[in-house]
Length: 224
Image (cartoon, rainbow, N blue to C red; front, side, top):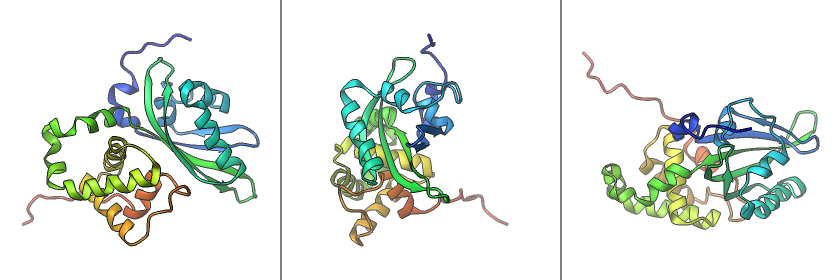
């Protein structure tokens, strides 16, 4: 199938930042959120997700690591989180971080629940963030943000640019400032609330747990 590479969901990458999935490995049945389809370059419901489809869209150099992650969660019931590249249906390359953990249905059926965070655009922004006019917040709160990056680097063995991209991704997804996300992560690490390296749930789940639900937008208009 030939697809146009212009326009579509990827013209606004932040709209499809976090995709969620469920994987029933005994039957090879996958359930994808709309964002999962879009990250892979499809319209929602356009294809039937399967392990074969997922592996086909992973960059050839990253497939071995992807399969190891699958084995870790399916065979050994361990959560996983790893950075890799995917090749979309439009032959574009995306940088993503995948995460998953074992779950059990009420009837005892085991499955994997997780998400895929598209870091492509935000990681590119992170590399050049100090050249951006929006970097003042970063500069003013550099110390706590650098500490938070260090926590993520240690927990997930990612580079500092990717660690900052994860902070930015969660910031946008939760409608919170990067400095607030970083502060919560650093505070959690100081109280031993962050997980142990090698047995960590995804960074997104850790941040979600530390920060709780997104704060509602506040009405700053004066009251009478």
